[in-house]
Image (cartoon, rainbow, N blue to C red; front, side):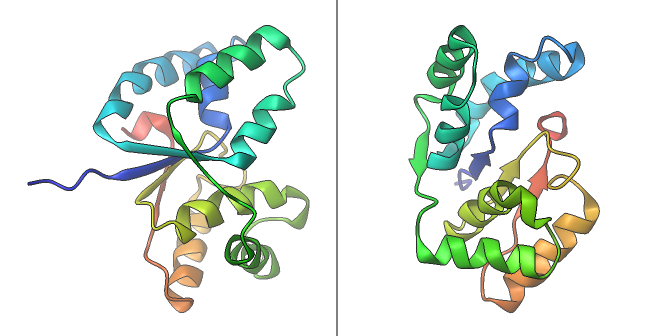
Length: 152
């Protein structure tokens, strides 16, 4: 029997569903969405917080509805804050983008298999994947696959 993979979505993924400025990203995200039923999908309270900061009410409600059935993990634990700080201290993620480090730390600390993001600047890039997994190995965490929705 195959193990169901555990997947974390950062805020960029549901945002991609409504991205009318990047129609290709929107198309890929909408094609990706039905595939989520093959995974155990997680978000975090950071995702909810970022969605609630959305200015446009209709979009905010659409985003909340889109992620409403996913398990939301806490990003407020000491372990996650310490791990996020480690990614920043080791210059994997810039300090001013702490929430990106938090997304990675939530997925790592909860032993999830995959982190999915549209953030190519700080998250979905070879350097980040390699360095995150090196730090994770050093600290006794399992490796995490970091991909964008198109890769599924």
